[in-house]
Figure 1: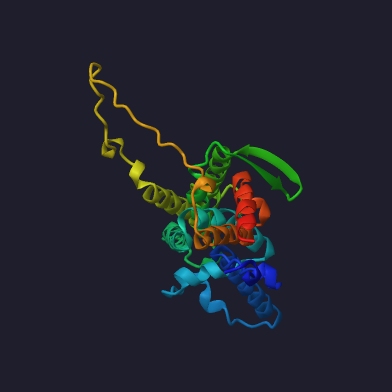
Figure 2: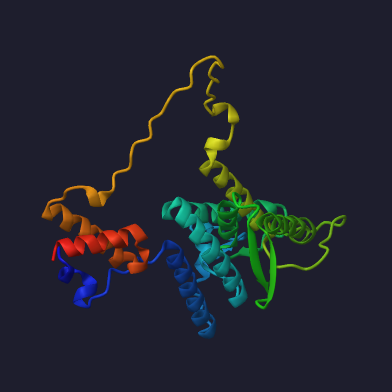
Length: 297
């Protein structure tokens, strides 16, 4: 294939990068949010079957509840964290793992929320993908505890801190919110009342954090027990040290190439330019491209 046969020489654009699964999930959530707006404006109830309700449990609601959100800010918060941490999980572990962690976190979060309300009024309802997002956050960040991140509090106040402190703050807020607000608020206890009114499902977030930690441990299971690692016995001090010969690097430009080989090597360099631009070539590759171009003229 010559230069004239390439996409950028014909005037056509290079193949587009496919849309990531993270973007698809965010788009689906936005789509259901718009449907919910239509439902509210039309005074209808065609999405009510998706809500997880304690008083009328249905099998599909354990998953479908995650597609709905209670207002714009609920969707925005989950969408931003999903976009950030989901892209990291997808890049490091693949889209299948992203989907498993997201669904698993939502399921375990819903189960934790349901168990937390047993014995109470049993009239609560759950919506939102928060538990799955919390699970993604742990899988994405637990191996980056000392990294620095900058958050925009209230979307205008930048705060820089380590990932470690972010996860500690999120976990502490979740536990305190469950113990002092949600848990007593869903039960009619005389000795333990809610310290403040709250509509956040902290128990679901707690389940998502638990599943995310277990998923992270599973994905990094080779590091669970040091005893599984192979230990190499030290060599005796009186044994001669092995001698290694470093192969002499051969300069590709010094090799005798046929015209077909030179054209194939030039095609590989041109393919790299097509994918990443001329700046993606190293200094040696640029020199090699000039040599091959001069030879094939």
